[in-house]
Image (cartoon, rainbow, N blue to C red; front, side, top):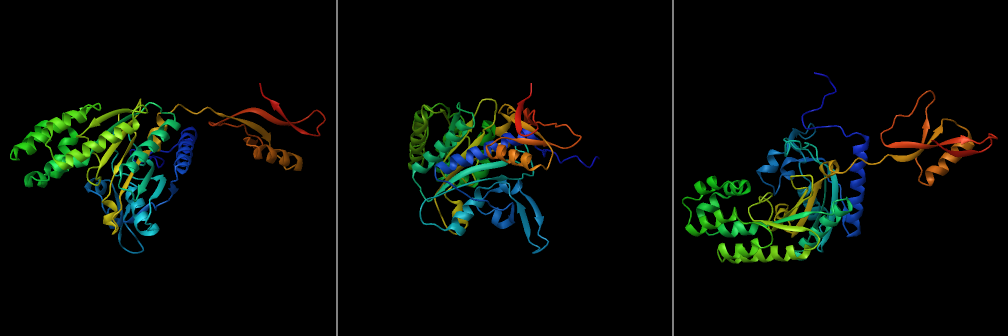
Length: 386
């Protein structure tokens, strides 16, 4: 096997694509800062027990594991940065007030999340800690929508769901509570036959409600139908009211859909969850939601909500960036030449000096001007290249 081949679903990022990704990263982080989010940089690997604290089996299965040659302890390469940022909030910052944090960095997955997905996503996201009210959820949704709009995606569909609905349904049924993980998988796949088999011995009210969840998807009117067909339980009423409020907060800015069976992230989410879809991509481009209990696993319970997305996946949807106009200059050590090149670069121009005996082969830059001596060979001037 050639020694330059990479593992499956791992790829190099070449200049034009790397430029798109980096410009998106800068654009999004700058937008986060305008909302008051502070940048943090968690480590690429941690002790495994810390990395997996507060997560479910899904995260465990996606984590690459290795032995630390110094301590002999098991380490994990992060598959997600959300819990790392929660740890930073809980233990390193330890603030009593509301804290807004953002992050960007590579994560690594043992298996790709989809057919053509990379196993090395570039995750970027933002989190709010310390406020349990819907105001935090609404701000995170607004931030996600504004960030996608800046990136060139004004047409967005927002899908909403709430883990409180399922938990309220199964709370009073011991058999259903025991099968919580299996129910989650069946609902997520909308596998009605599997769901019917699972719920055969449940209380009739529980069984009917669980089966109804597979049909509760569509526009905002789904909330009205849910109130009619689901049990009149406080947990369900609260969850539906929160979804109605969050949907109302983005009307006019995004198409809103409700899917009460879409429970991805259910294992550590604790409230409203959302997914954002853009034209050209069948899967959600961003996901977010409330996860109040993750900080509790680190010894400090804090309300928390946030969102994240994969910059590589998003960049693939954007057109190839136009090549940047630049200036070709000869190689030389003459003080006047160096001074002119420094002056041009300081003004924001890209100046590429040609190495002796070589032409320039560039993906990102188009040399449409050249730095040459004037007719009197006394001054360096710019000449347009036809």
